[in-house]
Image (cartoon, rainbow, N blue to C red):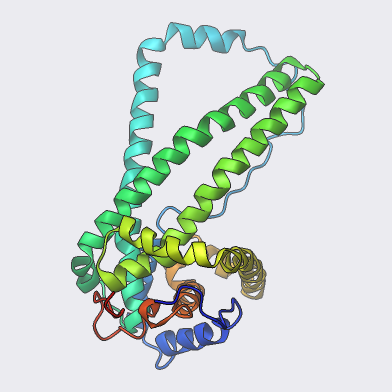
Length: 315
């Protein structure tokens, strides 16, 4: 099996991916198919993305805020504040785990629709239950690892800012240095975890689709590709940033051309996924076509008539 083939390019899959979008969504145009595939895409990206606006409520300085009454109130009502905080935390964790499970199921449902050019929901939901459960367990461990490693860093940085802001203290050199160290630590931990999440969705899931294997087995196979082609996959990640920027510009143009009506549609759950379907189908097709350049054993479209089989030659 060749893990370093020649002719692999990050730009070559762009045109075929666009043609794949036309073939799936516009040849012919089928609104029912759009809604079926859009539902799978909605599940695959459930709880991700969105539009967040962070604005200050006012431009006034809060350096003279008196927190005495707040502390008094909290101390006097700890009997219900603590259970409420625990309850909110449990709900957040449970919702996160549920969304992660649904995204894992949706990942294979959406993959199934793009590979086979079908608008099906029930079939891939049942067919890839085992693979989706394995993907969910892996992503759950990845999310827990990220929470354990990253949240303390973010909490420490926020605590420094809050203390300085509320107490009207100046940032001395030691605190600035500490913030820099925390920032570097966040990058060193968060960046690899983000890349691992991208590679899991973009490449490991298709490998699992082809071979009906677990997520860890899929990662073992992908690791062989990564080891033989580190520069190519680094370039892939960088090109994803370029693609994201282009999509952002197109999205802004879409919102402006529709007098913000398109923007309102994009933020509606499920409906927004249907409207964004050309983009999500392109992105899913692009990653599959890029992976296919490493050989027929990684080409999901080659095995589209018999998904779940391993087309690779015997070892």
